[in-house]
Image (cartoon, rainbow, N blue to C red; front, side, top):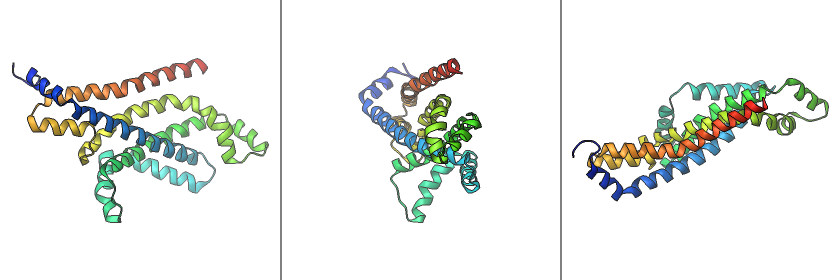
Length: 223
């Protein structure tokens, strides 16, 4: 049997399955680190976008608009080719984590902003009347309530983030997509390589997608 999915091609893939396993682990590591970075940036800029400080709101708006309206690939290439000219050379893995984390941080910032704004203003005013400052109000009153609202879209963002780590393949980042491209380009066994890659991405993303659906159902119940 010949063709893109011939059995001998699958046998070659099974014999070298560690190539894909190592790529999946690299993708998982990049996803976890990028998610941590994006959450930190998202919460920070989300809070800034709802503050009364015009400079903070302006900085947050510039960050969100610039990141959301430029392609992730362009941003990755900027970090890869531009940072060395600024005297900062990073490993390709770190560049991938930075690029994906900063990119999704902008989207998470909007999720956090929407969650904060969904809390009635009276609660913030009541907190101020009790002597709490802006940071304390956010920490103890607003964010704990907004958490229930923002968790479902945050889980969806995590799914998108995992898939977007595939851009590391464009800078030889050693991720799952890069390993699949490299392996299949050597022997032209593209069919098994990309089917396996798709299944591995599905295994990484499906639990997060299920979590997002469950969180949405819980949010509807408590609405």
